[in-house]
Image (cartoon, rainbow, N blue to C red; front, top):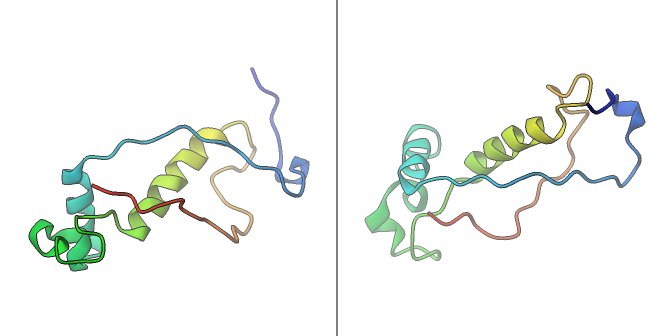
Length: 97
């Protein structure tokens, strides 16, 4: 069992590595249609005419997935259900459906 950590135990520059999350095209489309209905997120046919050439996950969707992965990584951290001011979230590439 890992000892409980507190945010003050974190060191500047420390990174946490999460696992991965696989999401289906149907999940991407459903999320987009409900929360971020831009055509390249929510409409397969219209997305073919976008700069992506296919449906891509919404940035809001990818941040929500990051948040779930953060909970898994920081499970040993007291108060891990809140973030002490996240200043940057970056994606290496678009999340293609």
